[in-house]
Image (cartoon, helix red, strand yellow):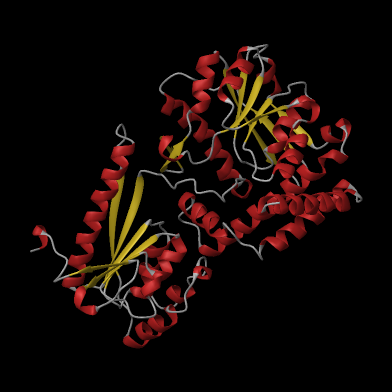
Length: 452
């Protein structure tokens, strides 16, 4: 009996017990009550909240921190509602389910006749209900689903997905079955809004390149099928609207087709940002990166920061060009000069910054009250992927912005004992005798030919 089996057993019965207990209540009470409990519990285990915050800042860089945190909380609650709806949907018969959904664009579904079709959607609102509602209207589909690590929970989820005639195909074993199903005139539901890593195509999403899986295009062309973008959105606490778009124009390159899909998705997210699943590293493999150099106006410090910045820019460009040779990586460097109002404030921020942590994300009050507003706005109303500074005076700003952006931060010269473990990389002179996994020692000064 291994650990995974025990965890599976425990989690399964917790979910079943939760499901049974709330199943005793009317659906209209059980869903919001259960969602409120899940929402409250989630703050004791805030995993991925920082990812959601960082993603929202990428998509909406002009939002204030308080507004971004508010959207994270609303997204958590919407996800809690969706989970409760899915767990308790067994309580509802067809007549009750029809009352929970408005359908727009059903004629687009009727127009494809008996042709195989891909229902192209995203992790938006309660996406699990799309296949169930589709089956209610006489259009059951094959659902490509990622197998969960706990078999009992996986079986429970799949049983609900297969209500009213839907069929589940496990992700990773799906290509041959999917093509056969499409050629036979069936429909397949695919979510195409997650990071595809090094194997994806780079398309613009909220103005920033994101790696996306082109697999649905391959299936479509192999099976001569059509692609219907279908989205579900919450229009009240328990009611949804299912929107069926006209068939996607498949002319052009794979990137062109994927871009059309992302343009539709982006419009939905802009309208109701709390309904998208932000808890995933969507832009992790973007070929578009921003490097921030914090300048303290000291020529020697600025030169060293610029040298490291240029070397980092070259390394990132080379890395992404090797992976995506057909694309042109966009690595930008921005330099912002920061001056403390006085030595007292600088010392106070340096000392208080030693106690900074990931909880600083979304706060920034220490910067708001100590820096001129024009400097504060430049630092905070833009999302940076890498932050570089030299010397100790700007160390607290580097660290706090690192937590804020969930970015990688670099410091040149010893930042001080209380800060050494707060940086991803330290470049320190050999004579300082600083050691650590994140430390790179050098002799002399960091210069290149252009700075000499």
